[in-house]
Structure formats: structure tokens, C-alpha cells
Image (cartoon, rainbow, N blue to C red; front, side, top):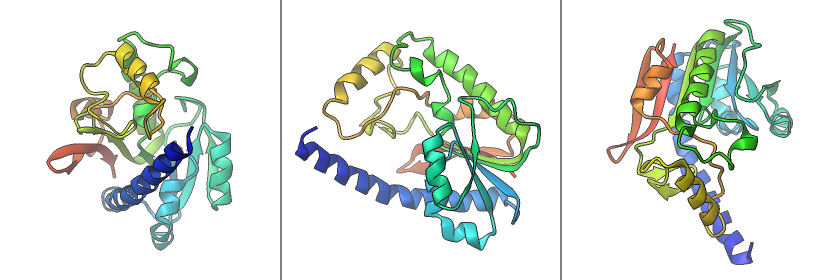
Amino acid sequence: MSGFKKIVRGNASRFYQHISRGWKRKRFIQFLDLVKPEPGKVVLDLGGGSGSFFYDNFDLVQKYGLRVVIADISSQDLLKAESRGFETYQLRENSFEHIVDDRFDTIFCNSVIEHVTLPKSEIWDYTADDFYEKAFEVQKDFAADIERVAKKYFVQTPCIDFPLESHSWLPTFYSYPKSRALHVARLEMILKYWIKRTSPDFNLLDEVQMRTLFPCADGVFCNRVLGFSKELIAYRG
């Protein structure tokens, strides 16, 4: 990568992080208002990576006395989460069938369920259009496990209807037409030049699909920007 590309990507990343902090703050306050996690009870950050979401809102974590456990499939990310002072939990990819019912008081799941699709090792080679159907079946199982192992939950995912696709930073890139082969080919080409790196491992959802995934939710709603559905949230409090 040229020095110019590195500078552009670095500046774009910093700008995105600045914007996303505001959204994270708003989302965290919604989580507190809707789910009302109890002080001292475990909040499992499902797919939480290095714990950046709760780390960026650590003042509220302390204020409300939350016991946050970061759960992820990446051992490297969990080590960073531990260095930030969080408890951690090692997950298996796309599944937590081994976890008993009602194991956790609260699950918080932020921009994760869209990535729960096919095994990561297959993601670039799978170009058949049945990817979306297969991915949705995996997401159904994942959502059912969330409802099974947690008394309360808050699940957020980007909405497919938002004009700017959040993983690639490209307008309507993954919405229409829904051709898997075209999406993978475009992404392979664009990654050579574009400022945002990503993998075609995600299956974006609409509001109807979100309601299907979480039939026991207290509510499913959209957060909007300029009238467009930016993100979907399902919760049970």
C-alpha cells in the first residue's frame, strides 16, 4: 500500500471512529433505558471483540455498577479485553449451544448477528445466491440461542435499507441486486483501491427479518438518520 493510501485510510478511520462514538453513546443509553441491567449482574457482550464498546462508555459502566464479560471467538481480542480490565469468555464460531439456559442475566450484542453466517474459511469462495438463505438459517439458530441463554437482551444490527453500507462504506453496495457472485467480485476489486477493508461474511437484515429472528422480544425498532433506517434493535427487558 502506498503512503498516500495509508494516510487516507488512517484519516478516514479516525473520522469514522469519531462519528461512531456518538452513536455508541446513544445506543448504550438506549440499552440502559430499555433493558435496565441490574448492578452486579453479568452483562455478556456477545461478539464484543476487544471490549471497545464498553471501554468507550466505561464511565456509564462504572456509574451503573455493571459487571461486563466480553465474549468472542478471537483469543487475541480477548487478551486485549482482559488488558482493559474486563472478564472474558471464549466462544465457538457461530454457536453457543454448550451454554445452559438462562446462563446470563443480560446479553448485549452490537453489530454481530449480520456476521453470523457461514464459516469464515468459506466466505470468499462461496458465490452461490443461496448464501443469503443459508446465512439466515444460521442467524435463526444464533438468535434462538440468545433468547434461550439470556433473561434479557439487546441486539443491534445495521439495516439493509440504509443508503450507506456500513461495512464497505459504499452506497447501497450490498442491497440491490442481491447477487452473491457480483458482491464478492466487486469487493475483491474495490479492496485494491478503497479506503475501507472488509470481508463479505455478512448478511444484512430488514425489520421483518429481525422480528422473525426475535419473536419473544419486547420490541423491535429502527434508529433513523435523515429519515432512513440506519440500524435495527431487538430487546427484551
